[in-house]
Length: 186
Length: 100
Ligand SMILES: [Zn+2]
Image (cartoon, rainbow over all chains, first blue to last red; front, side, top):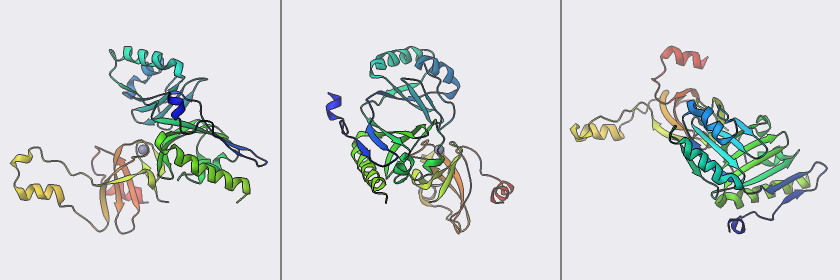
C-alpha cells in the first residue's frame, strides 16, 4: 500500500535542547491541485467546505482541511483521506456549472511537520527568503536547497512542508543536519 | 541574494525562485509562412542586446509560476521595475518614477 512506500514513515528528528525542535512526517492526507477562475472562488469554497484564500500566499485551515493560494488561479487543497471521494464528487458536480480542473496529487507529495521555537532556524538553513518574516497563516511555493516545496506557517512555531516524494529524502537529510547543528549549538 | 518583485505575488522573492525567459515584447508573426528566411531568422534569433535598459521576460517558476515582464539595467544588473505579462512597455516617465 501507499504507506509502505512513504519514504519518511516512522522517522523523527528530535533535537534535545532547552527549546525543543521536532521534525516528523505528517499523517497522509488527500491532496488536490485546483485551477479555477478567481471570480468563482465563492462557489469553490462552498463545494470544498472551507473559505479559499483570495490572495497569493493566503492559507486557510479548518480542523481537517487546508487551502493555500499558490498562484492567481491556483490553489493547493488538503483533506482527510476519508473525504477524498466526497471532495472529488462535489467538484465533479460543480463542473457542470463552473469549468475548472481538480487534480489528485495525493501520491506525488509527502508532508513534513517542523515544530518548536528553533523551527525558523532549522528552515532558514535551506530556504532562501527570511523565514522569520513569513506571516503566521501564510504559505507559498519556494525552493528548499534546490528542491521545490510548499512551505506553510501554521502557527508561530509550527511549519509544514509539502514536497515531492522523490525529493523528500533530500529535504529530510538537510533538516537532519540542521537539527544536529542546532542541538550542538553551532 | 538578489530579490525580484513578482507583480502577481506582489512581493519581493529570492532570485532562486525565478527563471529568465529572454527579451520581452517580441510578437510572433501572425503568418510565418509569408515571411522570408531573413525575416524569420530575425524573429527567431536577432535581439536588441542593449547596454542599459532592457525589457525582458521572467517566470516566477517556483512561486506562482507566472510569466511577467521586467525592466533591468544591463550595466548595473539592477531591476528598475516589473509588470504583468500583456501590459505595454512602461513609459520613460514611469521608469524615472520607479528609479527614484
Ligand atoms: Zn509570483
